[in-house]
Length: 246
Image (tube, rainbow, N blue to C red; front, side):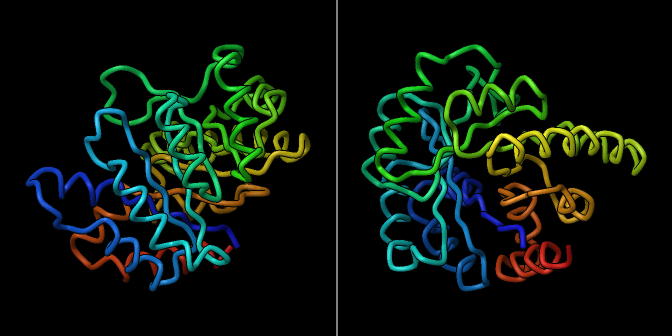
């Protein structure tokens, strides 16, 4: 079964819009875990517009007794302060993501050939602490081969292009999906695990869940948005049911 990692950034966004501690990020994570979610994801950005360093520590404390069954995934760019924090927390996985100045959310995967001098030592330091490393990449042969050459454990396929194609109709979605199938087969051949994320939802996931060798999907915006209307535990259950029906 494909693992679901619930991204709780949007809970922090709502809290920070008013200040204070409501809604609680840790309470949201607890609800997700009690509903059966086998993973929690956060992306602490440098401007702290949603997840903050204290959230990372609080979530690590919450999840520590559940480490054997609930994975903690920290996403982010390889800036020194964040990497030091990740090594101290030692989550199951760190997903290294490129960040563009002023972006609202991630807009692209790593460009193959760039940032090797930064990424290679960070990957090695994280792995030395027992942290699995995933690189956020486009579903392209060059990107997959580059991630393998850098020594990453997994890739996370950037799925917004698939999601946008799906919005235009199933035929366009299936055409886009074929590109991801090729990328996934190559990643598997090279010994990489396969994650996916960005704009996946209960609709387009009905196709994307069929991706060969898919290990994990990280879903935040769509899941939390639906939870506003029907409740967080119910939505986590809906995603788990869908993923189990592969």
